Image (cartoon, rainbow, N blue to C red):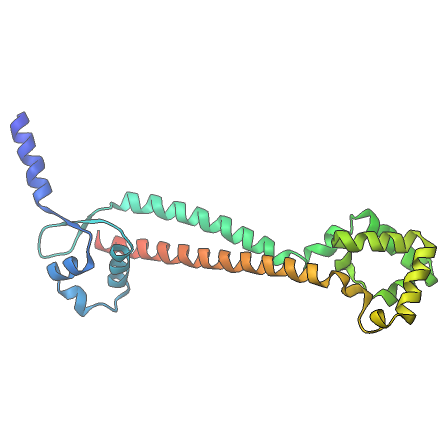
Length: 219
């Protein structure tokens, strides 16, 4: 094939392709799309174009996408699924924070181990600690960890705290353990916001994967 003939062949091939960047233009060329707007593969086609996707359509009465190719779509779907796996693992990790995994972490925590042993061996300490209203969550808070350590090791500090619990109107009106509730609430809010963001990302990826998979029906 001569150089000039090759150029003519390329120009002819390009002429036979329809570049689509507008849903209205595509519907004008293929009116049946409007009549079948509820079909999943038609909705996928519309969403793809309206979200900024570019299509090249072969000329003729039958709608046939020649770009992107099936190979390009498959590569993109693989990338999206990889992202989805990462986000799903992160979401699962956040679900476990301050829930199932927290006691497991504490099982290896030196302060919590000492406390547990003292709770078993020292009845007076056990009774005193129970008055605080602390739970295992307080061992995860830096500020209340210091209080627990002092309460465990310093008998004079323990007596002063217990006296405050018995006689102070401030501590009578609320549990001593509530000192870290604000910090716990803030941390929980941060985790919940991150989880909600991840759910939205996963939902968006699922929509993209479904759209691209349906798009292949037109190829």
